[in-house]
Length: 125
Image (cartoon, rainbow, N blue to C red):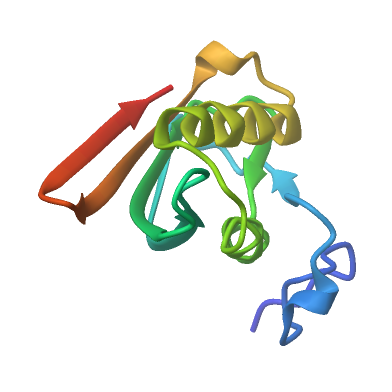
């Protein structure tokens, strides 16, 4: 059985009150990581209608990897924020790159906005 790290704020705790930002852990030796979620929701900044996304985050880690529960809570934080798909992709990329201490060009974020009004948008940053 693996011991739970006391360094993580969100991992091992229920609820978003334990969210402390994007958390990381030492890279155990992987060269590429891809994380995918279909639980990202934001709202259109003009109409206020919900936009549902599939987000894929890919990066080549150096010393750090992204902890998944903190990412889940981070993504849930956009639920009531108004953002265009393209701007949201850039923001997530920049935040993940900052947490991983990587240049933005080493992190790729693709948002696929589920169809609303018959149009699907895919934005990659």
